[in-house]
Image 1 (cartoon, rainbow, N blue to C red):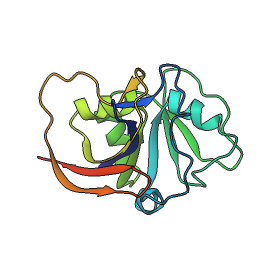
Image 2: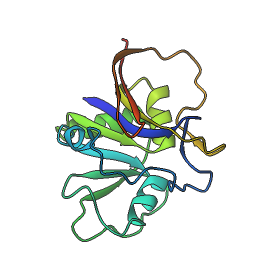
Image 3: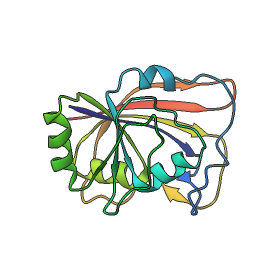
Length: 172
């Protein structure tokens, strides 16, 4: 099973404002590989805060692709067309559950979720798009770790809008 991250950060390394706001993300229709990436994943594994943010968008963008939401608390109702399941536990146990269901490629999203899976050594690939804005404070993409976690650079792409996207794979 592979776990991948596809996420945007501000130049100063934040994925959202302190209150979870993402109003600083560009609304440009410029393609940057998200649709192609989504076509490769079997399911999403997101944190509760990310789920709440997505629900606030007023539409469901994942179609019938399964979305597993990590939370210790009950979830608000999912949109009618959504396939959403509540999970909790340690990353290794969650990986075992998803693998037992035959899932092969999982998209990780949400700061806490990404950080937990990084610390567990389960992130295989990261695609990080840097947005040319400094927001000063917010929710960081990366948190503390008890050891170095090495990745190998695959490629970097620059887009006309100023976005810079780098791809890394775990160096195992």
